[in-house]
Length: 610
Figure 1 (tube, rainbow, N blue to C red):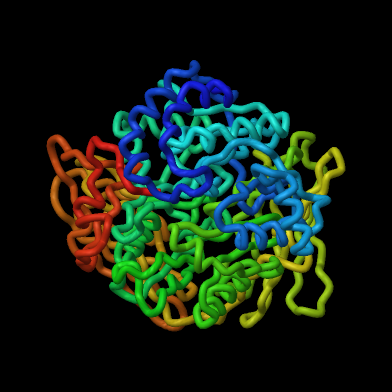
Figure 2 (spheres, rainbow, N blue to C red):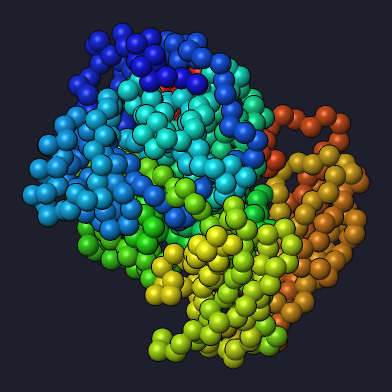
């Protein structure tokens, strides 16, 4: 375990010529790029590796938090608005140089200090998302630990802040900082769902050139509890290559993802990455991912490929019942805020102007970090989706865990604004799963519901946190003309291997008719068949679906490739194929270089990324 004083002493020479404290940019300076390899050597020599006890879980961003941590430097106006909203939700820990300076400023802004702690310690920059502490729980909900990695910048004061925070809260600290667990990474490029899935861009490979994907996955599993690690292609016009610049995980099965006009800027690669995700991965509950879109607004009419600022609405932050969203211009902001409120009803969605800070390649998510509650009552739930069924019932399931055990749980539902919620007791179904069934309603009904769990110790928690004012909701729809859709892992397989096909059709499907020439079976009427391919070749796949409104078909020509002999090498990106490399617009002024350069996974560390 590294010690803050030891680390600073061992590598303080790195900062004799560095930029003024707090003034360094989000991305690499030329000087920092030249010093990174020496910095890593110094960090990795400090102490033997210590991994957390087996079986940890990283909390999701929408879970209950005890504190928000920020570093008081740089963009004070933005930080002030974050504190103004956060003090109503949790403790705010401010890393700073001077208690009086922070106190006088916040008091002058009318912000009460009773829920604010100012922590005087060294720092280099504002970008605490990248270097700050990670909340992990032993055995899902038991002891709270702080985990960490090597910050992908040679900024030693920033790099020791996670351990400083652990000491401040009296928590155990575990750092993936020395061999064989030395892991260079960054928080803006590590999104998670609270159930063991993590998402990063392939920047994680470029920053760890001496490690295989299996080794990176192993470290992520030991220190953060990652059991499924999804990596996407970097975006050509995003100079820092962090997912939080265009993606936010808002529940276990739903992603908010940035959207450009068709064919513009990073749009094609984002679309290719979404297709890769939905074809190759399912949610922790085994369902297809839901992807909701957020506009990526231009700056003065110019997008990043035209050298406009990299404006993003996904760089937002949950703080218990509040969601803070970066804003820029009202004509675009209103749409983004509406999308947040539609997807997260009942949350206090607040826009904070980020026109200045976005020029430095970051916004609200980049400058905040969360510390989870010490006593979590965890509710993991696949929210019910719109349905075409007006008969039977609507099964609700949730995973409920607390260190004292679960005494009971209830689903509350209603179908009108002014109606009272109807309680429905949930039943334990084994493996910490609890279930109930909401009765069926006629087409045109919007059903609103939430889950409440009670632990044996007496703690009560609702999901979503804003219930009963907020809720999950789904619509009972009338049957529509169907639209066929097919999902499956793309890429070559060997003879005798199987492919799991998944239905992605819409419209309330009643029957499925699959055709698999060359496969075993050659046909299926199941929604999600598994098919073996015994012989080499290229094969078509087709699906015809029907409902009372009609039929629809999708045919994928030559979609299945079965290759004999030794399979050619591809980067497997955790069990799938390489996300496709989309063709982008050329841009002579783009600092990232050519598309090929941006997507190379060579043996040198990526320079100039956040």
